[in-house]
Image 1 (cartoon, helix red, strand yellow):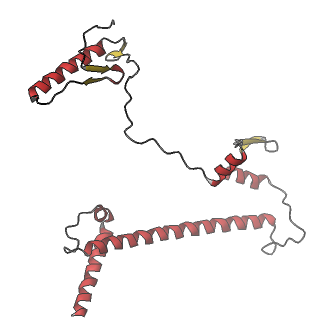
Image 2 (cartoon, helix red, strand yellow; image 1 turned 120 degrees about the vertical axis):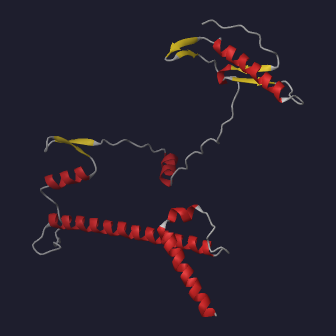
Image 3 (cartoon, helix red, strand yellow; image 1 turned 90 degrees about the horizontal axis):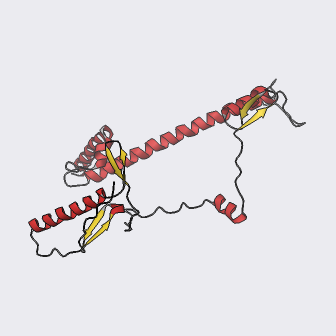
Length: 230
């Protein structure tokens, strides 16, 4: 398609790369009808110029090839900040160290297969294919009649047991923290003159039945305390 040469008024500035048209004429004192007519005329000029650009056939019509934009449009949000380096990364940068990628799998000639260099499968493979374990001269098994392999198995079970205990403790700590937050939220709402009746907060909606039960309990305690004071 050939370009359409249509006259562009001097007060108009075109930026076809951004599909933008700027009208520099003054509109002070103009009526809404005059402004609407000017906007319609400017839009027609912009559309005519866009249709005059080189285009190619595409699904549903033709696709115009826009030129490089001539106006720099500012960012909507500030540019992302650079990620702070960790102490190890700072040390590597200072010493000029470079990270080397380790192979994810290695070939085991004895087993005649490729195995991973880390992970559960690697540990299982080592347990199944380790027939000899070196021990010091003063080695004493943990249980009577045991050996180094049994000791390793017991240590592994103990590590798993400790890890589960830590996870359970973290879950209890998280639940306790959530419970205290709910109590603080309920107490702050009950401190208002309406006893939290007209407080429409997001926390009261998200806390659900737990917050309702806590509010009832605290309200009862407050009434009991007032009766004792009397």
